[in-house]
Image 1: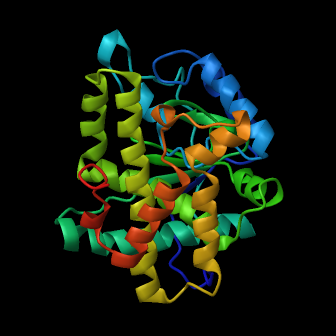
Image 2: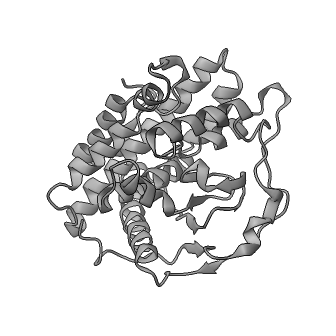
Image 3: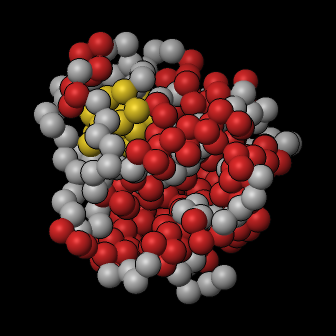
Length: 305
């Protein structure tokens, strides 16, 4: 991927190497309405152990969706204390520059595509880079959660050690695969601007079963995959950044993080009703749909199969 000449974003909040964040918020809170339960965390840990990759890859707000469900008297998770801000602007290291370029490319694309296709003004999110753990508007953020988007503060949270794990432990990686991860999280921000996330919150609050709530989460995640493809389609038309092999790497990443692949790796079988992000085939299908069409309307996972 030829990313060096892409537009650079200034909407980076770099909290890496700042020890004060380790104590901000007092760590994760398990079992509350805003976080996954202890049993689920244990299962996710086993998946990570078996596959060698963070099982919450591209969850893009799975905990956020759980936290925003107010049905049954639950409360939206809030941080125990507000963490101070990190350095804002373009980081000086190579990985930080890469993240700023991919975020900048997304900003360039969505500032044009969102108004043109949906008549909505694009408001860029901030991307927080951190080491280990930090505090988000949705509660504690840890490396073990994988990259995610928090709609309460409209920020993307990313520990870039995740990219190293993709390459070293899972046999994946590559610049375009990493760009896909970031763009998937931007996809959740686009969903938020389109009003999709609040609608899902209300629908999940009234879901008749966990399986129904999970199915809605799958649709949210697949739509974000498709929107990442929309970015790549339009961004490549503008900047011609794709190189031979890039698409294959992104497809391989989408396949690797399908719920069925992760569940089979951890326990030998898959339970579709428990899927929250979609199967390998579904993730590839929707990524390619966005790549091929470049159209937001093609990403309506709630009315299409």
